Length: 304
Image 1 (cartoon, rainbow, N blue to C red):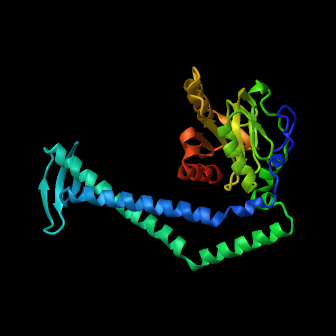
Image 2: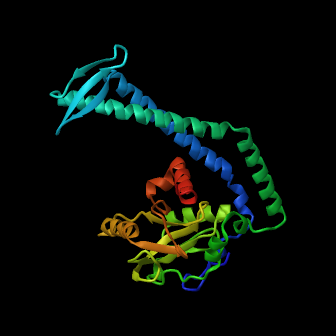
Image 3: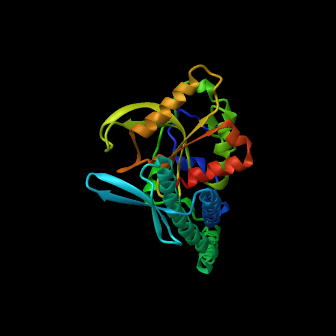
């Protein structure tokens, strides 16, 4: 295996050994899992709301405006009777809370029902089968699946040359299965996953931060992102792995970096800034727990 020299120009495409490996990712199943997670989360929240509603009297809050004053009353749906409660602030807030929860519950029920129908739809399953069949056919024909699954703009980014971080090359003591030199064993786990499934990525690439909303006013360019990779939503995900908190000022610098990412604009694609959801990060625990690692990869590939 040839170890790649980090100071030389390279492209994200260089990180991919098997250009048909993306077939290993069942993309619609990935979407299935995320939709199913949303349904589960919605159901848990609905149950929590129902429990809270059971503890609040089943009445609605009515607000009347008379002159310069507001008057509050409770309304009993069964008897259609109203009771003035303008002097009872606690009761006003309880009934206002009840009204808010009832609306939220209906919205969650509607959202959960729509998501469940997506998962149960026959045509959804048929699309999954057809897509996987087509991808296998393309892979068998020797086509580079990244050129099919990612946009033309993303592929231009994948093929664009970059120079990895030139500082402290003596710290590049680890390498991925594909031969990319890295600064920590933990980072190689992320790199190895990308390489195994055929996702092109950049390692230790310069992040240019812009002070405006267009990519013509560079503000600072002192960061090198651990990873950058195209995602399935047409953008570029910028990922940082934080695993050296034993060093002085590490946590302060990590927080400052994330803050700068959020406050200022970063353009990896022309006229398309990196979205807030496309900044992802991980800690050592995320790499040690298989379930957390799977969630991390989903966040990188599907930054919703």
